[in-house]
Image (cartoon, rainbow, N blue to C red):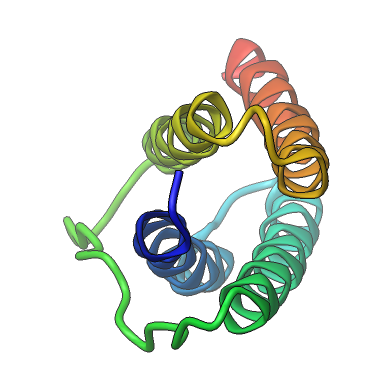
Length: 139
């Protein structure tokens, strides 16, 4: 796969990571109830993880000769949400993120460093999915 296509795909992933930061931060503001403290920490930890991913992806885009996007994907803001609705929204988005990385991975299997980079992101995204699924079983 040529660099321009990889850069385009990575920019889409970057836009998703940037959106994740905003969405998780928003969820940390609006969560209420007896589990608020633990969930605020959980959401803000995910903000940090999304920022780390965004930085990694942005740096990779630059290393490949591209220009990192400053856009974010549209964020659905329904107003009041239950904890379960917030967690489900986050789970859906994390599954979309992993799908982006898996698709790109299948396109770059001959480029070992890029393959390793994407595999690391996929493993980290899967950890987020696992955590969200465990939280959702509780609610």
